[in-house]
Figure: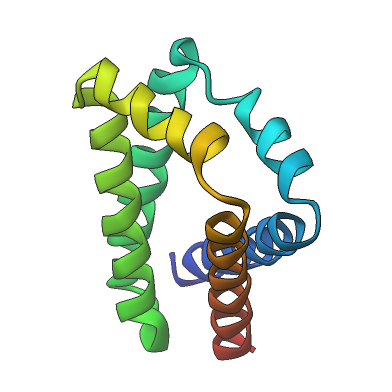
Length: 128
C-alpha cells in the first residue's frame, strides 16, 4: 500500500506541475481545454473519481511513512471536492465552474496556476 500511495502522490504532483505551467503560459487555451471536460453531465463522473482517489489516499496515508500528512491532506481535499460535486446544488456548482472558466480575471487564473505549479514542485521535491 505504501508504494501505491507514493505513486498516486507522485502522479498528482506531476499533473499539478503540468497544469500550473499551462495555466501560467497558456491561460486562455488551458481554460477552454479543461472547460470541455467540466460540463454538467460529467459532474457525477468527476465526483466519483475524486471520491475514489480521496479514499485511496486517506487509507494509503496510514501506510505511507513520511508522507502521511501529505497523503491525508490530499485525500481529504479530494473527498471534499467529490462530495461537493455530487451533493452540491447544481446551480451553485455550475456558477462556480462558470466563474472559474469564463469570468475569473487572467491574473487570478495565472496566480492559481503559479500556486499549483509551486505546490507540485514542493510535493515532488519532498518525495524525491
